[in-house]
Structure formats: C-alpha cells, structure tokens
Length: 176
Image 1: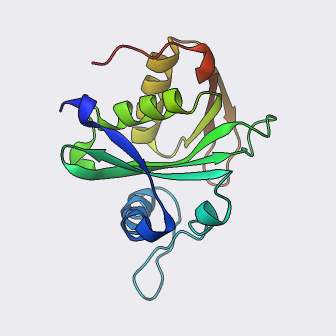
Image 2 (image 1 turned 180 degrees about the horizontal axis):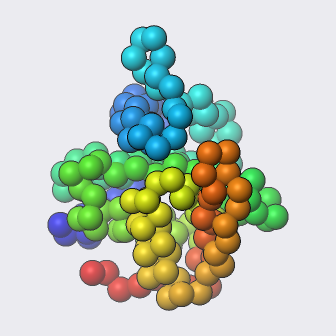
C-alpha cells in the first residue's frame, strides 16, 4: 500500500458516528484478551468518547484514512496515568482495520501523528495483546531510532509495556 495516501482527520462532534462504529470493532478485538463486556443491546460502548468533545484542548480523536477510505482511528490525550509529565501526549487507543494491518497504514498514521504533534509521547500496550505489543515495539523503535524509554508497569489484567520519547527532538524516519 502507498502509505503517502495515509492521512489523519480530526473528528468533530458531527462526525462522531464513524468513530463510534470503529470503537465497537476495536473493543470486539480487545475482548479476545481483556474481559470487556457487551451490553444486552449487543454494543460494547466506549464511555469516554463524549469527553473528546467536552475537553477539546486535552483530547484529540482522529480517523485514519487511506486509499481504502476509513482505515482506523487514533485517540490521543494530554496527560497519562503512567507519566509524571502532566502535558505528556498519550496514544489512548489506536485501531487499524484487520484487512489493512501489516500494510503500513498504522505505521504511517502514528508517524504522522508524532510528527504533527511534537512533544513528550507515552504509548502503553497491554502485554496481553501480543499483536499490539509487536507493532508498538517496532514502530517506536524505528521512529525514535532507538532513543526511547521503556518500562513495564502493573496493569489490571496484564502488565503494561510503556514507551516514552520526545518526538520534538527526533527527525522522522524516511518513508518506506
């Protein structure tokens, strides 16, 4: 896939429905390893979604688009429970449609995100999510040229692997 066609679109409240639909797919995927419950109506629901418009200076919802159309999403917050920096940017949730995984869409999207929003970034991934762990380990290492901090912290169900780096001090890697 031509990853130069990957873009991030900041989602407005009026464009919430596609993001909410993608969150259902994401939560379905995550329910494979985490005890995420589905409602009697058949929805997982993402309780924090309204806060992305209630706190627009601290929360940033993005749709990931590629030549295939809507391809996923990224939810970014300022502040992280695993960082002492109250202004750290955190990848709170990240999702790419299954058929587009390993195509370069996810890599291109996060590289764009880290470049367009320079600063101290935190990425945490559950060790119960081996596919996510492999993805984040590789993209963080490649983007930072190995210049990042990594720690393991306790989690509710599985330990978290936490990556931290400052994207404002890095030159982005060349496009594949």
